[in-house]
Image 1 (spheres, rainbow, N blue to C red):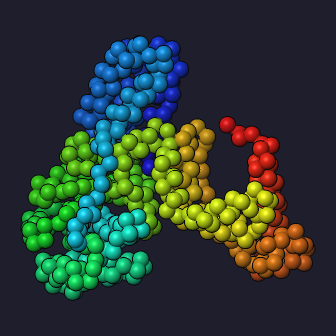
Image 2: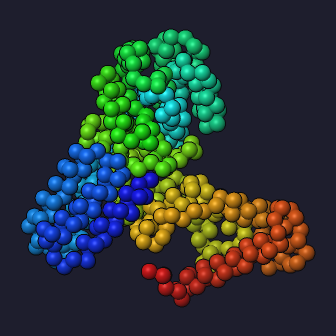
Length: 435
C-alpha cells in the first residue's frame, strides 16, 4: 500500500537530508515535490494545501535553522505532520461490553461481509474473545449464505433467522449471545448501491434497539475522494465510531486514507491488507507515516512474529542452528511458521529502508515455497534428518514423489547446505553482517 506515494515522498525528503543548511528556496523546492506527490495520490486539495503550509511554517522555524542536521529535522517535521493527517493516535476498538456490540455498515460491494469475518477472526486471535456473527442483511441475495460460509471457514458461529425483520433478528441474537457466553456480537447489516432514506432508517432502528459500542463504516479505498461523501452521508445519519478501509493492498493510490480523518473527523480503525481472513490490520497513524516515508515498521513485524511463531519451537531451532544440527525437518517446521506471517513480500516492506534495498517491489512466487515443501515431504524421515544420505537413486525417487525434476531436488539440497554453512559461521562470529 502507498508504494507510489512512498517512493515519491522518500525521493523528495532524501534530497533535503544532504543539505547542510535549510533555506526558503530549498524548502519551497521540497514542498513543491511533496505537494505533487500527494495530489497524484488523490489526496484532497484542501488537505494538501494545509499540510504543505504547516510543513513550511515549521521547517522555517528556529529549531531547524539552529540544528546541526537540519535535513533530519525536516524529515521529522514531515513525519509528524503526516501522522497528524492520518489521525495522530491509534484508535482502539471498544471491546469492553458484556457482550460488546459492533455494527458494520456500508454500501453494497464495499467488502462488508468479508470484513466482519476478518474482524471476528482478529478479536478471537489477538484478544482471545469469543465472537458471534449476526446475519442482519436480509435483502442481498446470498448474503446470509456468504456469512455462514465465512463463519464455517473460521469456526465462528453465525446467528441467523432467514429473511425476517433485522431489528428482531438482532435483539434475539443479543439474548442468545448473553445466554451462551459470547464476548462480542458483530452485526452484518444491509447495504445499498447508494445512500437512501430506507437504508438509513433501518440502520437507525437497529442502532436504537441495541445501542452498539462500535458503528464501523466499511469503505472501498478504490473509490478515491468519493469515499469522503459516503462517510459524511452515513455520519450525518449514524454516529460512526470509525472507518474500515478495504483493498489498500490493490492498485489504490491511498489518498483517501490521508484525507478521511482531516475532512470527516471519523478515525480509521482498520485497513484491509489482503483478501485472506487474517488480512486485516489495526490502523496506526504513526507506524503508517513511518512506512510511507521508508522508515519501516519493525514493531508490526515483531508483533506478527509473536502471534504466529511458537517461542519454544524457535528457541529449540536456534540452538540446533548454532550447534550445526539443523536438518530438513527443522527447515520444514520453520517454513510452516513463516507462512503463518502472511505473504513474504508484505513483511519485507516493513523493514526500514526497504525501498532503498529494492525490497518494495520484490515478488515471491508462493509456488516456489510449495515446491520446496513438496520435495521435503517426499523424503523419508531418515532422509530429512540426514540429507547426506540422499544420493542419485534417492533423488530420482524423491523427484517422482513430488512431481518435480531431479535438478530441483539438487538445487534445494545445495541451497540447504550453503545455508547451514552460513549459520555455522554466524554462530562462531566469523561473518560480518552485510550492513
